[in-house]
Image 1 (tube, helix red, strand yellow):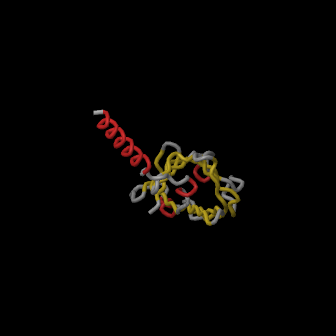
Image 2: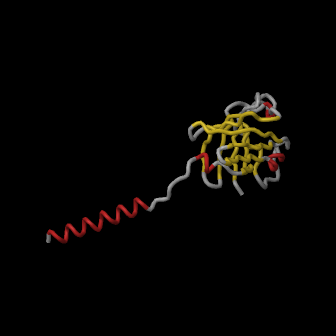
Image 3: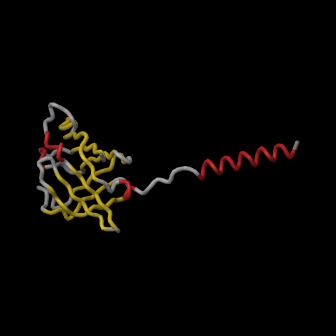
Amino acid sequence: MKKSYSLIWCIALVFTLITVGCKEKVKPASERIAKAWTAESVKHGAAVAYTRGGSSNQFPGYSAFRLALTNASGAMTVSFTDFEGSTFNGTWALEGESKLILSGLTPQPTGTGGTIEFTINSLEDAKLVLTRLKGSSKTGGSINEYTLTNP
């Protein structure tokens, strides 16, 4: 009888180790975020300003919004196209896994000093939700929330 219990415990232990060892490893945020993102929806403050495919968008220019983050051999570059169609190039960095910083942007976006910072609300393989930390002068000083997708 003792051998039966020992065999059952050994089988349970092996099954547990196999189950734990087979879990998918999550890539770091710096790898998961390094993609080209487009706007699915945008809020200016609490008001919805844009929804992809919406017929009554207050800011239809967000259909051209693009945030392209690349990480090629440690060179973290960004190309950012805003809702007015202006494109800015620079570098990006993460502060922990909750803050995205775009810096050295040229030409400098209005009122930014060349730096725009976002809180990362959520990051999935095909969806990124960001909130801008400082108000945008182009949208009347509102704090904007961007739900972005990687098509």
